[in-house]
Length: 375
Ligand code: SF4
Image 1 (cartoon, rainbow, N blue to C red):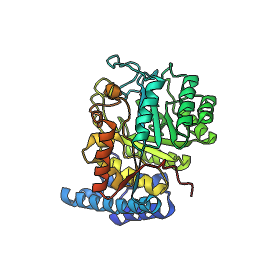
Image 2 (tube, helix red, strand yellow):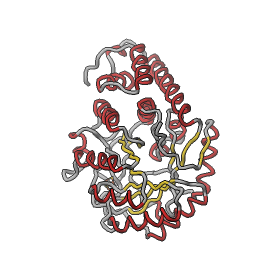
Image 3 (cartoon, rainbow, N blue to C red):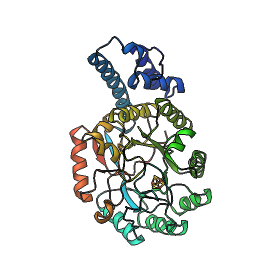
Image 4 (spheres, rainbow, N blue to C red):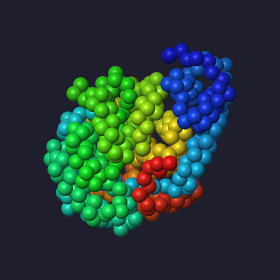
């Protein structure tokens, strides 16, 4: 067990207040805060389980109250929805944590045609969605020509909508073509900002430097960019999480997608424990204080981990949800992890349920594009 610096409750609160005022901490301070909340500290030795839990609960509450204050100041009680279309579950990569990795031969592979993608978006538009997120593995069939063709059609049919892509790593020229064809946003999680940890999660042929270069290229082109990481992934330490926060502090993305690591039975990480709800919502609140304007999804992984996961995420500062618009027939084939939530409800019914869930905690699902507020 690593030796942690002694820290008092009041000091942890001071760090949260500093983050709220300055929107940044040093890496050492992020680590201290995470250690106080999640580590085994020397000062806990003479405390009962109950006392420790009470302190941690108090810390969470202080953090969540401040995160909600900033969420409300910028966005009010508005929750943006993004309609997710899972375009293809073919992928040339082999990330150890992913259920649709190349070497998982038990997956039934599919790819949607352009017509099917347009059909999903049409249904989404009728339901009020004004952002479409097209997501898929790195599938050789979907060349930049083919993707540009889909993007151009969507752009001309829905000039009022935002088009978000999430198709992994490409050369800068391809990203530029997607942008010129009409895409506005790109999601590419960095997964971990630590080289060594990156190599625990990915085979040798995948490199963190390349991932970071892609994110920078996307920003330079003018995309609204989303980065992010898994919480509780195999081999992850609190120091890795502090490094992730520092990386995001430097990159200043417009969106950050974080969700708990959830294992998939047909991957090398099948037996690894899942990430925790507490750690994920704590980090969501920190991200909200780092950048009050950030677009922050309460992810499907969070909703999968716990029935109240989505609500807990919103109450910790998240402001985006991404319902599934993919055809029912393919949803069970796009499983990055086991027991994924929201695979069994039609889009319209799903939206109704979400509206009710959000209303119950005082929030309102809105249908506008929800761009990153520039000021
Ligand atoms: S995480 Fe993404 S890049 Fe990695 S195997 Fe899965 S779909 Fe492919």
